[in-house]
Structure formats: structure tokens, C-alpha cells
Image (cartoon, rainbow, N blue to C red; front, side, top):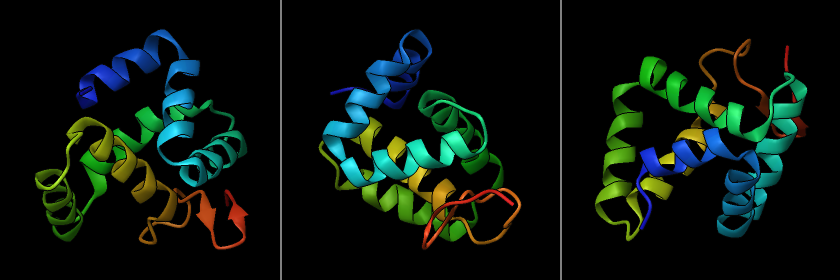
Length: 109
């Protein structure tokens, strides 16, 4: 079972490792992440690191509560945490200039 730190360290060493992990755990999230990353000139690993940083800085109390609840019930908390933070970054409605996903696909204002 990988921790969030393990996953991010792997992403620093090899972007392909993170992309393979994401493809195998959640293909739809992998596709959306790749589209969003490309739209702002990042790779998937860079987008994931950005998502973690943005979640840490910008997520609200309800977002943190939801994350903690999902971690409590998870067999793989590191993966669950990263996937939740990336999903949050893709769909964060509070700041359209930083959200890269809309219902029709990747987007950057």
C-alpha cells in the first residue's frame, strides 16, 4: 500500500509511473487529468503536484471533511488522497481561473 508521499515521490522520479497508476485505478480520472494538464502546459505528474498544493492551500472545511471521511474507509489511503485531490482540482468551482475542467472537457480560462 503506497502512501501519498510514495506516490508523489514516484511521480518526481517517473511521470510514467504516476500515469500508469492513475490509468489502472481510475481511467476516467486519468483521461480528464491528462487533458487538463495539457491545457495548461503540464504533464500529469506536475498537475498532480499542483492539485495537492492547491488542495492544501484552497480547499474548504467541507472538502477536508470529505477527504478525511474517504481516507478513513479506504484500503489504500495514499492513492485515495491523491485521487481525491486531483478530482477536486479538476472540478473546483470556486475559482474559474484555476479550474481546468468543465462538463465538456478540459478548459483553461
